[in-house]
Length: 294
Ligand SMILES: Nc1nc2c(ncn2[C@@H]2O[C@H](COP(=O)(O)OP(=O)(O)OP(=O)(O)O)[C@@H](O)[C@H]2O)c(=O)[nH]1
Ligand SMILES: [Mg+2]
Image (tube, rainbow, N blue to C red; front, side, top):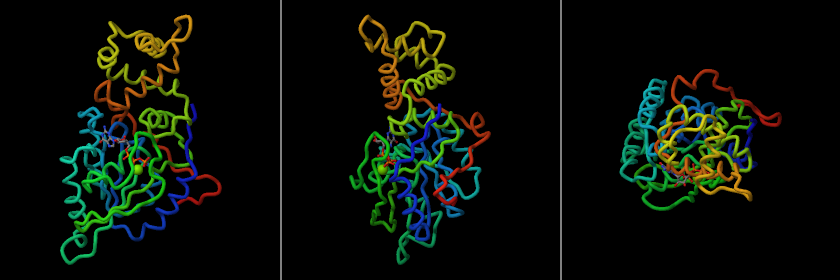
């Protein structure tokens, strides 16, 4: 399955981000805690160069806590990187972030110092704008449960010495790793029209069936798991009334329902990738012919 999604505003946003780079002291890269490897944009890694970076593993409330712990250890071993697991919707969670920013850039943001300029970057729908709203304590930027809600950068003064830039979610022109792209689609980072919902659901059912079978059994009240992902999805569809005339299961509707429930955390806390399982053969950055490599 080939999935690519690089709408026009992303190309424009990338150019705007490049223009702002010299004015940035620190980056907060928001990753999806359920898929921290696939949700890391290799393009952003290159753009930020060697400036300090906090990797926020967001949506931890939806991810498997043990696996998230493994990812934090993994990222903390990287040079110049600090990893912070978060639920950006929860105010109590984010208080540590401004302190960590100041610690990483001690000559800015304090009394009598110039403001600390922080750019929030990441792929679509990982919670960048939510994090900014929670940090600001009010709704400043628009958020939504579909990708590409923010389409141009916006600067927010937190009035505590920190200036934040919200940026549009950026993907990269060619998603070379089809399995990673499939996980991105399952998580909600890719526009629903850019992939085959049934294929993505089936691949995700197969993964969850291997790692979290009890969650599938419980959510869909199944006495046992049917043998194949297709049979599982059919059974889910049958039990949830996703039927067409003649009583046959509408697999597409069942797939939509399954993805919706997965994204909403209805099955329980599920991680779609683990360190070690994933980090071999990380794809390199490809660019389209009319776009220079960074
Ligand atoms: N469960 C959960 N949901 C979250 C969390 N953070 C954000 N969300 C939800 O994720 C969805 C996307 O949030 P946004 O803040 O709009 O994401 P974004 O990264 O700014 O997205 P783009 O602007 O499209 O790039 C919204 O429905 C948020 O409510 C979190 O920590 N946990
Ligand atoms: Mg946004």
